[in-house]
Image (cartoon, rainbow, N blue to C red):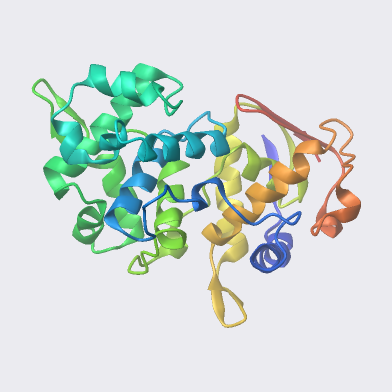
Length: 302
């Protein structure tokens, strides 16, 4: 893996990403799939936090707009709303959960998704009275502690010690959850968020590589280069102050996602030519070269 990080370039790009997304939007888009709440749910309520928490836990290998739309429909259906109540989940069976998560397309891998959903729900119910905020409080709202606990907390399942949190502890989903709690649910008590890496998916990776914040040659599975991308944005935003506000890695997540989804996705993966370049807010930083990003493989020559 012959890659380099251009953190100076990243320090120039990060403020532009952040400011553009908050004003005109990236490619005139500024809404994330999780921004729209189910009918009857108020921002920042326990119901909202559970809606975000449980839905994001199955946000893997999924089309995000489709996932969040299905989750809203599941919540709005009186017969499946119980799925968002850890207390009610506890009194149902996994078979019912599997069946009901398919009604509105909430699950794509029925057994696996239901097991993830049920395990996380029961952890919050049995240990934290059904409220994820109680878990955050036990972590003293310290974001790095939250990540560590997500990865390491266990329970005895009758046979062995098993993880408390499935997929919610992942390299992408855990930081994504914390960002959603901050930005969507208004949980402003979280501290040391600057130590949380950007949640990297194919969109964040593609935009980062197209911008040249990480460049060089690589061909292989995504995770090794995902790690480099996390490091790149951590270095690029370290001690970065913009308009008296500390900019952190998590602040470039949404802008990068939009830049890829509505722009870099149309870039020719071999030549680097992009039909959106002339109207792209980041066009001055777009680099030439091969940038091919897929769910199971990344190949770059920049």
